[in-house]
Image (tube, rainbow, N blue to C red):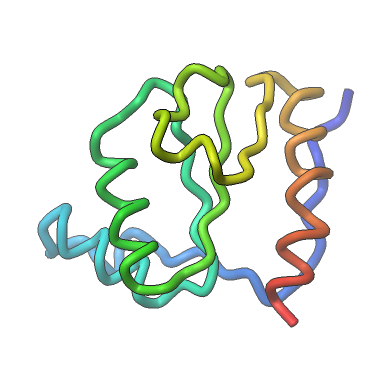
Length: 108
């Protein structure tokens, strides 16, 4: 299956080079502060991801949770919608298909 093609749209990733001399906490805060939407992958229960979710919620950003395993979404975030995906070509294409309409809606 071919890799998913991402259409041209107003969604922009912030290049790592522009934030290279900052601490991890500053990078998280700066990047999230510049964003309207934050997609957080909860797979593996990385504490930094949950820290970033907290920052995004505090700043009033739209947060989209994704995970490979339902159990990786903590109980206090389970009331929020989240998207599960498989980490392979087909699974990532399905993930993109699920995220695309919401991202386009939020970009308007």
